[in-house]
Length: 339
Image 1: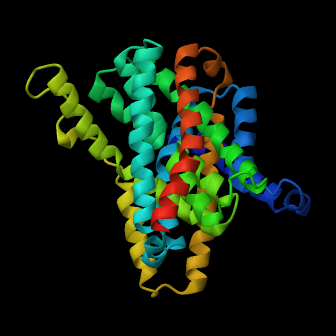
Image 2: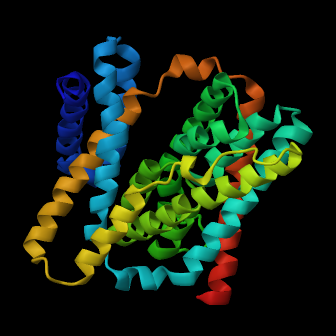
Image 3: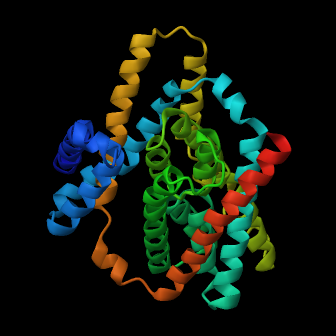
């Protein structure tokens, strides 16, 4: 426990500062950034100006992994199953189309156009189509990837996921997303932005309803990681022409925090929890998310980004463009049919 204190303390201090800055009237009247956005900005600056010793690393990792997952679980208190029903089959179809489309395009562009190693292509595709760095790391053992390939893939999805997190709210507020409302924006964000934390930041930067919808859509997309890895392992097993290749189902990393999130939605749906208690949980949860965003910023090393080869970045850029413009088209089309 003591080993996480140095890094966790830094993330908490940045979260407190970010919450204070976001509360200032001048900020509300101008950029109106949420504490989450401010936290990652401060984190990036601090992380690249200050050389933290290895003793801080466990705390940063704890904030990015444990704190974030706990925060996502308790995001369930912002929602009810009645809210989920409002997203319904429309959100599921949008998620599925964007996931499959992005993954296939990513693999094809990587291997056919840029002639990258197939494992590199799978890593880039999974990171962009599902849940960023965590999907990359989950896919690596399935495709038997080299660790430096995984590092490159994580760097690319971090770059474009961060760009998405800042770009989406700006584009939406400028009225450039056709006639999207907050709900459609949430579906679009949840189905196309890379990391869970980035989706949360981009969604709640607009409104409560946009953030809730984006979170549901994103977590539905995250849940698709397991079936994708199962299908990929069987495909690679057949491709290698050896029985039993790939990974056992028990070895596939399931995002269990998603089930915790669903459980909290269920608890909140009963109406048994008093509103003042729910509001307090949501305030605490927002602060936990801000801590995670601060750690994400600190861990974003600009020097490492400079060392990434350009081909993976080109591939990630193409997927980013598809996610953005393809996402707009798919959301509009599905909403027209099912909305």
